[in-house]
Each structure stands twice: as C-alpha cells, then as structure tokens.
Image 1 (cartoon, helix red, strand yellow):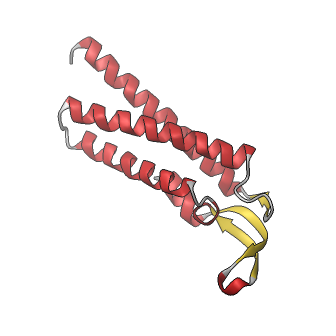
Image 2 (spheres, one colour):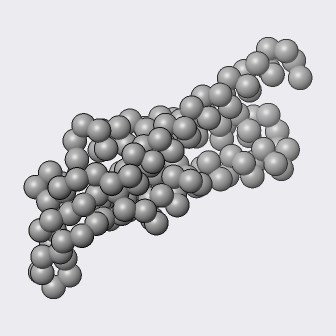
Length: 134
C-alpha cells in the first residue's frame, strides 16, 4: 500500500524540457505514475494483489487459496522490484528529459524491495506450516 501511495503522491524525478499538454515544454517534477509509463501497470497490479493477499488471509480461506495468492504476489513483487531497480538505479525512464531523482524514487524502490521481501517471507511461512502439518 505504501508503494501505491508513493507512486501517486510523491515526486520521483525532476524534469527539464518534458513535453506537456498542447506541445508546451514543462519543467518541474514527475510522480512515479507520470514517469514510469510501462512499470506503473506492473506496480498497480502488484499492489492490488498485495491487498487481496491480506483479504484472503483475513478471510481464513483454504490453504490452497492462500498459497496461490502468496505465490502470485511473490512473482509480481519480484518483477516489480527488478523493474524498480532498473528504472531508479540503472536506467532512468527518459534520460533526455529527467535531470535528477527525488526522494520519492528512493522510497518507492525501498517499498518495492520491502514488498518483495515480505512476499518471500509469506511463502516461507506457508511452507513451514505445511511441513509441520498445521
């Protein structure tokens, strides 16, 4: 949920000469949603699956349903974390118009990595419960 809030509400990049509405040049900041045009959909789906994982766990559904949602979250969060590492640390979204990174990009990366770590731990917990036989 934190990643989703950071994606929409916090500045991630400083832009200089970015094309805006009506073919005018915009100088200012971009949120993660504005700058990460391809990655934003992956992050949005990952956040929705994370919310559904909490709902499935709270509803005490079958082990198979909980395990399926946790595995889906693991795959999506890992892909989101890799995409965020690439876009925040290695290859900026638009190097010709992005002039700097803001704190929001670093916080978004940390939230993405935290979500992936949480998904790994959830799957580990599920495996441990199956081995114990609960």
